[in-house]
Length: 153
Image (cartoon, rainbow, N blue to C red; front, side, top):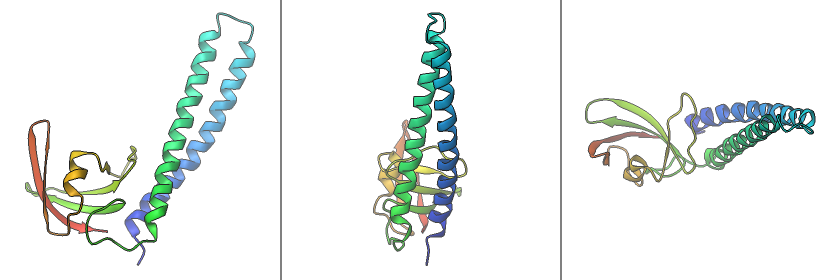
């Protein structure tokens, strides 16, 4: 059975990679045009540097998206683990009754609609190796939070 939640995440990442790739090309082209037009002007040096820096930032974002996509692709065909490990989807129920869904990954990025957490985060560390119905607890900024694992997918 395919890991549907990971597949949804992968599809979203692939779309983000496509769009980021297009934007990276446009940003590089723009930076090159600014560099050409400002080549002999000291007053345009700031514009040239800003354009170059923007192109670097966009390229770094594209590389992060590609790395995250590749990480998910690696795990998409593997069976659902019995205990939490990277990369997996999970549903948690906190002691206050709140239910949240997360993806545990090695290289988290910000992605709308998806809660990616790192192995290095307090939550990620408290979840590693937990099975369905096992309790977890972590502390963040002096506040303890606990709950149980409801689902692993």
